[in-house]
Image 1 (cartoon, rainbow, N blue to C red):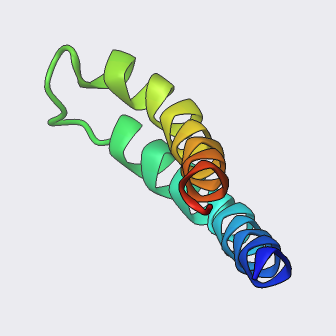
Image 2: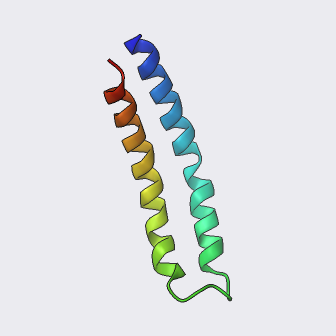
Length: 67
């Protein structure tokens, strides 16, 4: 059962890493919008790091939840 969990975590991480360029492109597009709100640029700078952190924390929680 542990092997299946590890394989599914690896698949989730690979899919998540493959989506990083899409996230970066969306953040750059939103940052370059002329009508963007004042504080939006600061939050968008952090969004890429939050996305990667959620992928890693999800993998750790998935491993920890399996007994």
